[in-house]
Image (cartoon, rainbow, N blue to C red; front, side):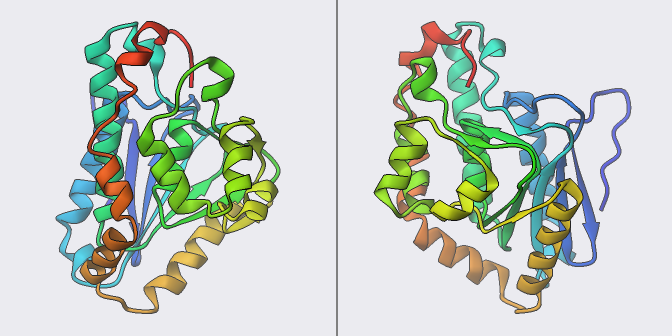
Length: 251
C-alpha cells in the first residue's frame, strides 16, 4: 500500500512493508496540525482500517516524519483568531487521537525531530515512542506562551507519565525534553543516534510485536480499557474559547 496523489500537495504517505505500515508526514516543514494535515492522517488510518491484509493478520503501525520536525504543534497561524477554526482544529485532532487509540494493531511513534505541544500529544497517542537522541525534543510550550493546557492533553499525559514530578517538569516548567530525558521520565521507550537508526529501531520493535500474533481487535479493545479516561476526555476541549484571542501565538 503506497499513496499516490497528483495535482495536490501530499501531506503524508502510508506504505506497507511486510506486516508493518509506515505513516510518514512528508516534506521539510514543521508539520503543524491543521485540519488539512489531520484529515490526511485520518484518511490514511481509515484506509488502513479497511485493508484486509492489515486487519486480518497481526500488523503494526509506525508513524514518523521527514525533516527537522515530527510536528511543531497546532497551526494557530491558520486559525487567525477565528473561534470556529480553532474549534475545527481541536475537534479534528481529538478525532485523530481517538482513531489511533481504536486502531486494531500496536502503534509506534518514531520521533526523529521536534515534537511540541499538540505534536507531542500526537506522539504520545501511540503505544510506544522511540526517539532520535542527537536532535529534537519533546516540549509542552503552553505555560511559556500563556495558554492553559486542555484537560484532554493532561489525561493523555497522566496515562503516559506516571511520576507527578516528571509531569510537573514537562508541563509546569515547559522543559525541552531530549530523548534521554524522555527515557529517564518514562515517556520514551528508547533513544537512538540519527533518524535512520530511530526508524530502524521502530521497525524492529514493530516486528517483535507482530511476532506475538495478537488479535488486533482484542489488542485495541484492551487499549480502550487502559485509556478509558483519555477517550472520555477527548470528547471535549474546554480551552478553545479561551485561546481564540491568542491564535497568532504558536504551540
